[in-house]
Image 1 (cartoon, one colour):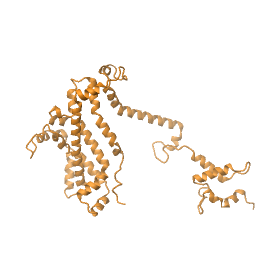
Image 2: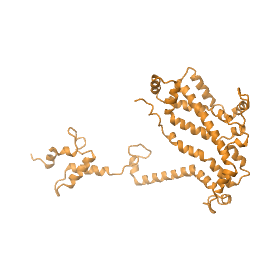
Image 3: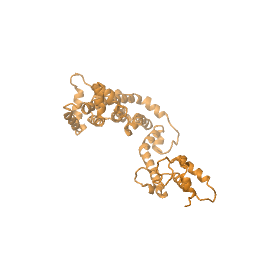
Image 4: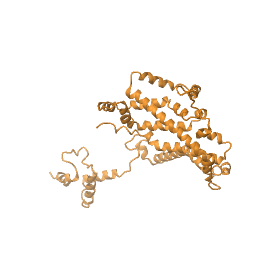
Length: 368
């Protein structure tokens, strides 16, 4: 029986140079190499094949695989989406979907960023241009004096600092109560934790407006202090800590932490304070970021309670003072003051946005 040339080549040790390991069943893959080195060797074999001779099946298979690998893969390869991979390869579907994505992105940018950009534009636009042609792009130039007048003449700088101090104090009190309360209810779990947890959740069903009168009377005549807290920042800071929502979400986050870490820390001799400070808090960066943003922004925009307990204009925040000065302030200057008041919340969100989207902070405490 006559042996064909390609059969002889299949028996030669050169197969090892092609990259097929000894003992590997090449029949399952049709004898087609798998690695990038094999693709290069196959291309070289094809280039060196004699003209007019019989084509080597291995070379043909290698070339076909190389050409297949050059195909541009779909963005949804290896992932399940609302458009199948086969549909995505169709030009009409791909074009329509990309157009829809661009339109959706533009709509979200206009709806989310558009009002802020418009307010920033009004802050440096002359008042007459705001009234006559609000959407025109600076028909009579830019007026930076709006910002300086709002900051100095209208004394926005003073109210801005008042707002920062109020927001920082409220943030600290809320974070302290939420983390310690969640730690007790979720990690320490004393016998009465279920009762306290039920009471905390029950306060969520009480409307906030119902608590205004008793809370105001408590601030007016606080027990044990003997002096009123009206016109004092503590009148805003202390009630801010009574946030059942923050305690609940922090406790639920602590429930998801691995209990093995707590047991390992106790075995190493860590007490409750060391467990809270060195183990639980480093693992809780995402929820601390969420609570921080919620607490800071809620305090920044709060109007009713600061207006009731901070009656002195010199210590009032921006949320209370801006409506009061609107009537006697130029429109351009007033809009500049509004733009200044939005700077901190926007910056705060940009700083903490990663903590909303990531679950980082759990890996460092697990013992190897």
